[in-house]
Amino acid sequence: MDKDVFSSFHPLVNFVWFTTVLLFSMFFMHPVFLTISLTCSFVYSVVLNGKKAVRFNLLYLLPLLFFVALINPAFNHAGETILFYLKNGNPVTLESIIYGIAAAAMFIAVILWFSCYNAVMTSDKFIYLFGRVIPALSLILSMVLRFVPRYKAQIKIIANTQKCIGRDVASGNFFRRAHNGIRILSIMTTWALENAIETADSMKSRGYGLPGRTSFSIFRFDKRDKTALLFMVILIAIVLYGAAIGQNNIRFFPSIKMPVMNGSSILIYCAYFFLSLIPIIIDAAEEIKWKHIRSRI
Image (cartoon, rainbow, N blue to C red; front, side, top):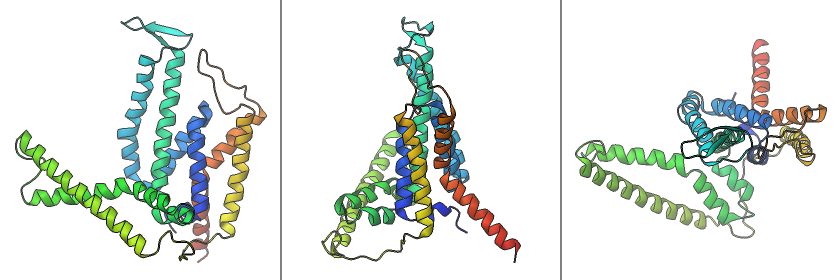
């Protein structure tokens, strides 16, 4: 069984789900929505990347969360509940602190969702979805999305090669290290430009973007994808209904005001929770299925 079964679904299902959770995470600042988004994105990133994701989340994203949450009250002084005054006379309000925490949670959740997106939505999936509609833009976007991981690996290769001939950025005086670093950056830039030209020439020679061009694809929209997409659409409709009746947001300034929790809001929260947890649910169901099959052998 694959480590992540959701990645094997049709690209349309993957793209619709990621687009939805990203947009909902950015626009719905309700504490329940932020908690669900942050928790589910953290869990899914660990499922996809394992211990590396745990280390990255704890060492980098957690301090960033606290930094963003603490820096907001220093610059945002709106709110009617004044807790104390800074030395420069500006007030620190309860509303600005809570808004800073909410904004930090939203920011970290979006970063985590994008890390999951990069692991699941490969360049071939993106080109499959948008290659015929916007061929040039889809090619550029697919190259941009794979820019960071691919170029990080390449710059390590270049740095290790330069180290073997005594041009290491960690040895010598300051000017020597700076000179070696600039040399590595120059080699990396040249490689990147040549790689972009080669990719463009390769796609052009294959007739990419020409009208009437046919292409082979391994992706098939089957019954499993239809079921998942239908389930997603139902959950999305419930969450959008919550947005229409004002259950998904919160007012921070001048005072904090949240919608009253009732039966409808609980249904909306549950719908968003299950929507954000769809990949985990699919992976868990597949794991149970495989364990049942192995037990019968």
